[in-house]
Length: 159
Image (cartoon, rainbow, N blue to C red; front, side, top):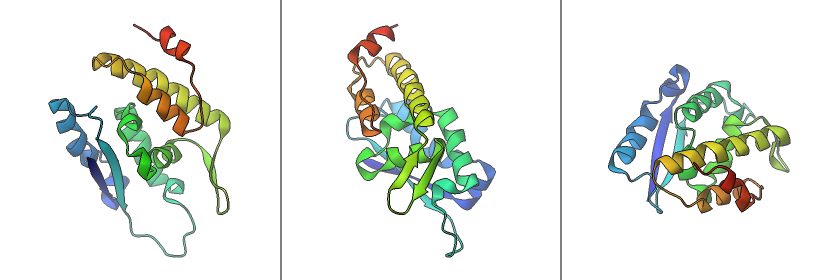
């Protein structure tokens, strides 16, 4: 079940998280946030100069909004629509990178490693708080971004 968080220029410019809160908070209240078929997507409605070659992740107001969202819901990457590319797009919003027309997004390797390790620590703790003991989703998230995680790491993170 894909749900879309729609952002306007006004939301981005004012760092207004209301569109995300409106979608995510009811899911949290109902306990539906970890449903297997939940997949969040973003629709960013931003009027842009057609000659501006920058990707959305290169626009400061867009990146800053996503950084604020990441601070509010640091576990959010777990429930994004990975198949639609939302995890890679989200990572591009918060991880320093270069964009190449031929190679696509090329993350700063150290920054991506820090991002992934942070997400592993945060999401594992959050899953434990939610009463979920399965870390398959966390491992798959790391794999989606190119990292293999040993099962032993999760043993170290047990409460």
